[in-house]
Length: 121
Image (cartoon, rainbow, N blue to C red; front, side, top):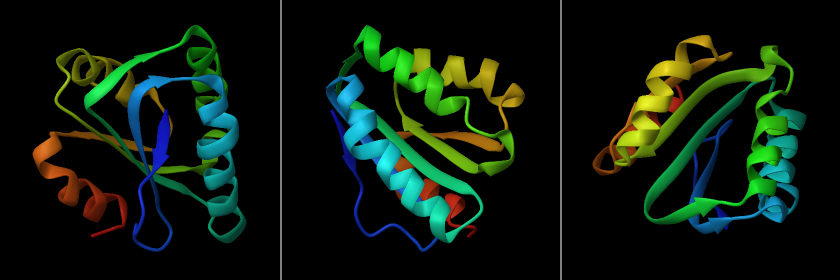
């Protein structure tokens, strides 16, 4: 599931992947929160935490993630991936430079720094 991270800085949104991520997590949590952010701000500044309690993405969630990432490239601001999973760090090293916006990976121990960076600090 995808959980909303509370108490994020103004103009930002944060999520945490827990267990198995399903398509409804995008429809019910991620998409509405990002749409609400874009009603008030012109950029998506987002923290996404994938910790030890994350298991996997379902096939349908992978499709939802691809659609989510295909949003207008001009709306992407700062995106922080917070994880200790090596495969995600490597994927971000490969795909981060070619994605719109500014992407950065932080270890789980630096989640507060990731939130600060996404918030413009």
